[in-house]
Image 1 (spheres, helix red, strand yellow):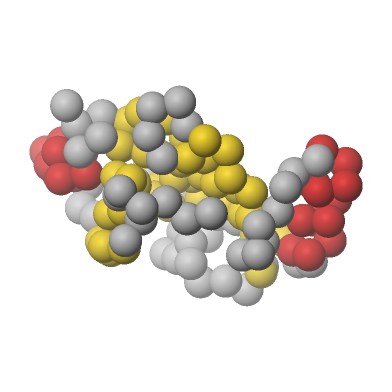
Image 2 (tube, rainbow, N blue to C red; image 1 turned 135 degrees about the vertical axis):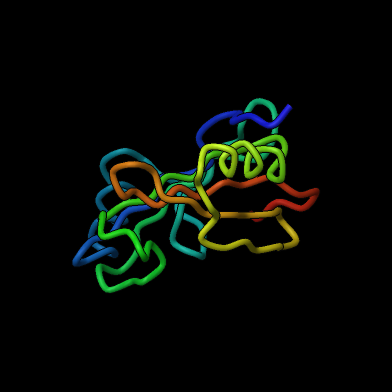
Length: 123
């Protein structure tokens, strides 16, 4: 149906990501995985991911915002076709064992990650 199903992740930059991770683990009880993020299952498909990156990361480029939002989609090609019809071109695409990804910029310069989950999910 080519639509967003929910939040797939929240990612943000910090000068001291380990201190931020430690705070979330200690204060809010986040269970951090070996890759330094947390995961919560999504009721329909995929999961919600939380992750802090080094302030110097270029993963959010070309956005200058210190965060990025990931949305779970049911049909990546369909969502990208709808975006293209509105004049929005993807910044890139990537295929992984745990899903298909594409990135677009929203009107205020936030990089948006679109994720169509695959059969295999990270733990």
